[in-house]
Image (cartoon, rainbow over all chains, first blue to last red):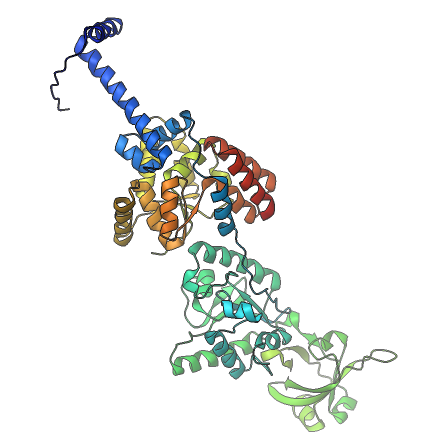
Length: 361
Length: 172
């Protein structure tokens, strides 16, 4: 330690006091003066650091650095000096309102069991204002794309989500807070969103999680690229190519999506058997559905599209629910169509196929 | 840089260490992100000066509640600018430099909080931790106890504590 000599004149009373301290502490006069000076300087530093913090002239960290104190020492001193935490009631109210803000947003639309769950990043304000998912420029483009691949049927413009949900599918977002751009979301929100999304997937048990954008897929599954991008608790996940991807890439990914939807059609657990096909059925060209299998069909009589052993056909459907008693529903696919694909005694399994179209295999 | 968790400055760590509150803090946030300067101020200086509570911060790091970060060159530069421009301490500047990426930072100092707002970082007081906890499923009684302990160690004003308590009930 380097030293420096300082000569000062003090009044005789102070000199006598210094000698008294030196005697009491069994020190020589110079050492006693040095120790008293060190202690006084420290006290002065603390007092001024506390004052600086109290007045807001310095932050705690800066005041500690400038006074040579540690943050621990300065916080102790601030407390001993009776200085309150700087957060006032009004400021706390405003900041808490921001921290806990729950902006209006789009509600989740859970899929029916075995439906597809479409996951976005977060709602655009324009969609929230419209009360429907994907009403921004990129969102509308996404609907057109899903319509092209057959996942969206007969949508009403501006309410495409309703048609999507009517097919048994669902919608949610990684983060529910609407922003004009996803860049405004914080890492914390994304992480919390991923946790919440995991929980939703577990509860809703969709047959496919379809990610509209990369961010939610990456939060859930790590490094991902467009196409089938992993599984979550045995639920396959698929990432669409980005809105600005090349046409060829989009076509490739869409083809892969169609293939994936074929692969991940309702699991056996989600399928229901038809009645065994009898000679009578074959002669009428119809398949009879017991009550559990009716859930894949509309509740009223009419024309329906079905996929019979891989072939899409238009059939007449009658649920036969009354008036006196409920009987098996009937799907009339035509005599030839049925005879070509189904033999007597066969029991078909009914499930929800691509775009919610009933599938009989 | 892609950081996860919420950055916290030395004051937050010291308050939590003093009330032995890191386990409960783990229910409030994913992780407390700690820059090199904050680690030095809270842990190294604390241990050197014989503050035994500093050991709790080390234990919280081992338990994964506290995550130590290295700053990249860009973040270091941002921290240096913040320190020089706004006369903040090194730890506070580094905490805000990380907060710029995340949008939030746990900061209690009044001056540093004002700077945070100026640079679009939401300053989250350590006193708000119980509210974040309730939002993530912490029981109201546990959160209220945590708030009381934090309020004592931070010498919080009574009217401020009332406001936080009011939000606690509303968040529930």
